[in-house]
Image (cartoon, rainbow, N blue to C red):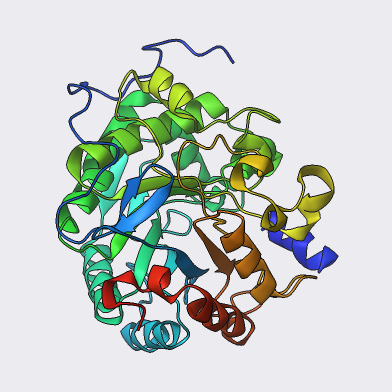
Length: 371
């Protein structure tokens, strides 16, 4: 992965109605802020809330155990045991790639039209979200990655063709995104959906086809609208580099304004921002842990978490978590809790998350009084 390799080595005119998302419901059908039904995490201003109390994400990435776990080689015992470890370490959330490259579980056809979702994909996710609920681990589920578009991926043309057609996007949303929301509407531990891991590299890199932001963000706009219309699940996109999440640099390609212009739908917006950070970025874009989200470049309109950062970096992870908390970030998701690469694993993460449990127990475990 481009940015992780570097990290390790160093540690369009927008026209209303041009794209569209099928039929447009009346705007405002799902409230943007305010308490959701049941005990779901919801957004109030620039905070995450749970039953009237603020929650801070003392979190990690557990992206996969086996590549394409869900519909593939899903190991229930691993996830049960690892969620237990996370709970013991004070972790209250983790980010999981529920589809890694579009070859297992969920597929689209060569022309980009929607293919199918395997029954095993659903069965594996059923158990994953049950285990998350048992261990009180909130899940940010990542639907796609730049890996879907890589030339080395056998199905890369399928996914490239999918995002270039609004008709194909509509079919994908109807065939997968809406059933996902409906199936897990009653499990509050699926707290958010991350629409794509680091679409930056789909846009920038030749090996991923250098897709346009209009096509990528049109997909996000349609998916976000469908999620908001069919559930209380929160929506984000894991932008790899702040320059694409900020008007300080290249422009915010997931801003409310841009997404709504692409789709013509008022429900096309993100509930929170989740930019990623690795130390190679510092010389160009600064260091997020010693500044507020707005100083780092976000627009200050919604909550913001650091969706990825290496467990191993020049500054200790414990300091980064606490400094992010002090500077107004709403959580940190380190990469990774299970050591999928050289950026660190559970033992590197644990001191930081335990320290934060001492610093802010009432915000990390607000549902049980910080215990």
